[in-house]
Image (cartoon, rainbow, N blue to C red; front, side, top):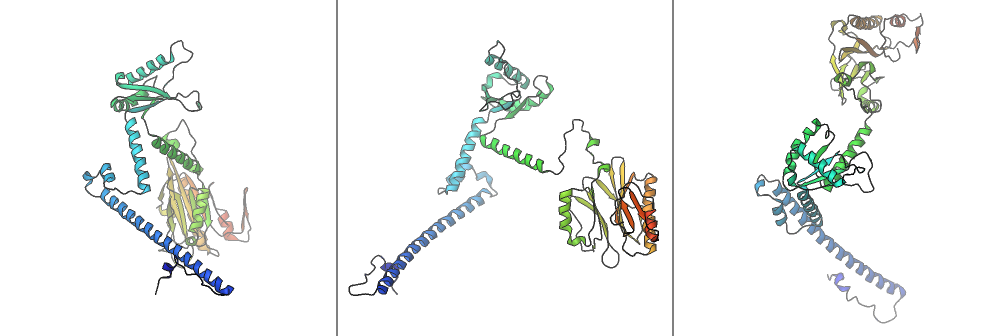
Length: 431
């Protein structure tokens, strides 16, 4: 079959004679379609050609990458990489041009130093400012044990538009004729011991690209610092003791999860928003296969021994030293509770999380009351300095307020619980 595309250049006319309007339109449509198909075929061929070139470039880049990561780097050099790749893409040319410019700039400044904080000449003095500057720099060279004869030139780097801080000296650029820069940098630390130059800093000169990169890093660092939930305040009287977390300033969060496995993400969001140091959870409903960990926290948990539901867990932020409590007085297996201790300096905080199911027997209630009393007794014996208890005790007939609480005499277990000798730190939900 003849390719209709080849007929486009010599498209036949409709011929002489009387032809209907429909025939004429059909003829024009066919010719238009043929022209469009030819144009599309040309574009497809052009795209195929470009794709073939890109595939060739990709293969060449892969070949260069393989050779650059080969185990024989002794045969690799920047010049070999350029020479062995005669056909380069625009991206490669751009990268090589930037690299070449950066290397050229680094070679120009390899013997340069930048000095910050160096005093400037007194413009109100009768002595020529240039002579004053010379004397200041010579004194600096003496401290750095650098030969002034090896200095090509030195000059102040003035900021366009004037200084931001009139009390801050302009940077001083020093160009050496040899590697004296290395010796100056090694001696720069001794400037801290002098009275005149103790606020002077000496650093290698950097290329514009290096300065731009460092500025971006500083900006990013500042952004991250500003985003911190608890930004530390600067204190000139910092000490190791002051840096320790304070137990008496703990931030705590408690909840009854009713299956924590299904609400771990919600708990993480709350932790991100509230940033608590301690988290107590009852009714975790965990089993042996449950994942309990939360990043940044140490967990202490106890699951219900038989049946579903129940379970308690305590999360302690890793910035605090925490340990499991093994005191025999608190080792009661008939109730759902878990204990840990937090140590900060001389402070040892005893933390417990207790769950009393609804409609518990008097025996369970008695055991819980006994454990709480034992915990308070351990504090009185000076084994711990403070006591904190989380829990859901399901005593709805105790009515709490900021001033205290009261209990109806009709509910004996609630009244017994209300009569416990509780410490000052006792956080409970639905007591």
